[in-house]
Amino acid sequence: MSLDGPHSLTPDERDAVEELLFRMADDEYVAAERYIEWQIFAPTLESDLALSNIAQDEFGHARLWYDLLQDMGYSEQECIWERDPATWTHSTLVEQPFEEGDWADAILRSYLYDTAENLRMEALVDSSYPPIADRVAKVLAEERYHREHAQSWLERLTGGEHHEKVQAAVDRLFPYALTLFAAGPNEDAIVELGLRTENLDDLREEWLEIVVPFLESLDLTVPEPDEVALPEETGRDASHTDAWFDLYEDFTHTYNELELEEPIRLRGEG
Image 1 (tube, one colour):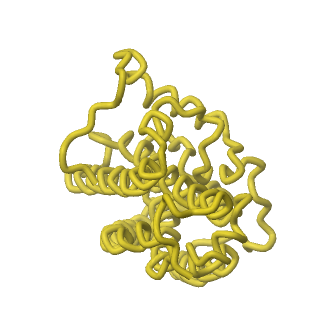
Image 2 (image 1 turned 135 degrees about the vertical axis):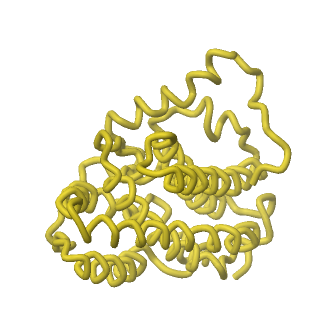
């Protein structure tokens, strides 16, 4: 099955495409908003630059998916700046505030998220919706670098005095990481239409087969996945923690203060 483009979709197909795009775009945008909180606070200049570049990449990926939603008739204001924060569908992993000064939190979060994102992109390479499939290669190339950066730092942190901090981050973030694979209302249609070639349960198992052995190789204890209760707020059903609403207010503050008629976009973005 191949879906031609936004103007040929049936209502049910459109719902499935929109859910997939919002889910991906929101994840990337909110992850980037959290990463930029580390600017000038990372432990080294190289780390500061690396995480800033990763945040820029994630904003760019979000732009790729929000642009496709704009092709479907949404405005940028409706996608981001004037959207009800209670309708966003990002995983609650990416909205969590960082423990103050806890670099282990940022690095572990990046590893958990980017490993999942790499798998998600691989499942979109043969998407039945060409506008999605055409953009996957760019995201995949950059996500691999993000994951390698996080792996390198995890090996460094767990090899010394910061091992306990990494373990605390695992304990705190692992349940939220599982929300990356929580289903939305159109999940069955997303798979049946071939928008994504793997279902979320299979992606979750592939993710576990990668992250659990790696973390355990660093002498970290990983919670038994089947015994971990998902947080009450998964994000995928638009349920969120209080931290999200504070973050949304922060990053829309300047837009609202300037009372722009429409967002200003730089040429060459995305």
